[in-house]
Length: 233
Image 1 (tube, rainbow, N blue to C red):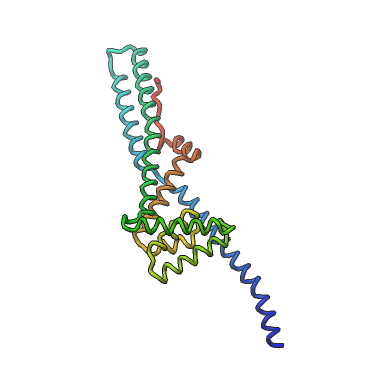
Image 2: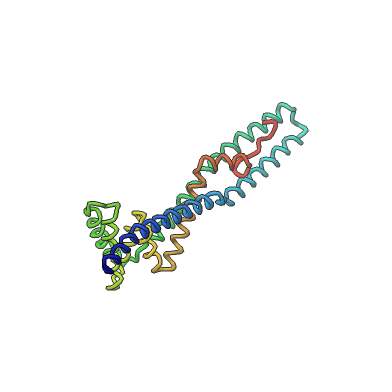
């Protein structure tokens, strides 16, 4: 009787534990989404904004010089300011593409820092990675439970045996797959790699913010990313 009651209690506990686990995962996902949204709103681009201010200042000074040139008729002054505005506007447009290229390069550099492997280890890591990739891809559930369990099993083996190449390969694959739990275990083995991952996340967030049409519009409306057109132009 006692054994039957214990079994019934255990069976009743299983769905409750599963439900609590699911609720915990949902809360964590919501916190993560809120954190990402907050970071997106708080992203700034001081380098571009400083360049924009310098360009605006130069435009204003040059336009004022033209206005003060008594040798020019009103029509000639307006024509010169219009020409000045057109040239500055064309240059300003190129700075948007140039700055985006800078952000892309920074994100790529930080990604390389995350995945960097010392030359003597590269062959071993490559071999372990290829083996892991084949195992998880042929598991019949490449994006689900079976593949993650396979990766976890190899991670534990790498930890037990001190196989750094295997651990690195697991970390690389988990990061590429977006499997956060296993990725974070790998990152935690190196403070330098953890910091590189944080910098990579910041670089990606900054690039995504710059490419966001709404953020681009807001930047223009507030004048942080746009130029004020002279009234004569």
